[in-house]
Image (tube, rainbow, N blue to C red; front, side, top):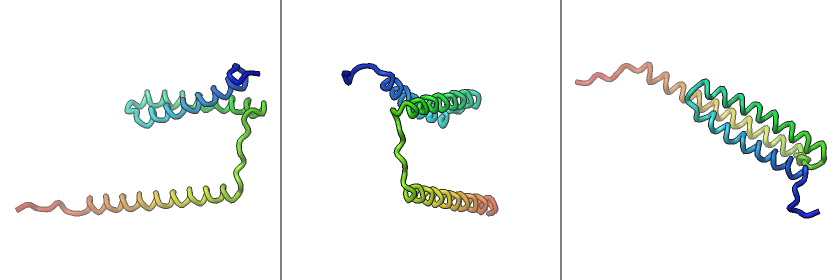
Length: 113
């Protein structure tokens, strides 16, 4: 079989990659959208894209065309630890920002001579 031949596997993997790219583009549109109705429409399309990607992925996995690499438990634990640290840092930053905003709101306006 020639390597440039169109096969079910090639088509399926191309579809998976296209759906991944679609999800990236839709996410950017959602994050930059000002109109709430349009934003919700993009979210609905993104959710359908996730469902279609999962379906294609499951099919490829079932056919043996795409098998995920299994992470070692130490790697999983490290990622979980890193994520927890990031969450804590974000919470602390948000508390600092909130306290600064409260302090500014409490201070009386400066009187000009």
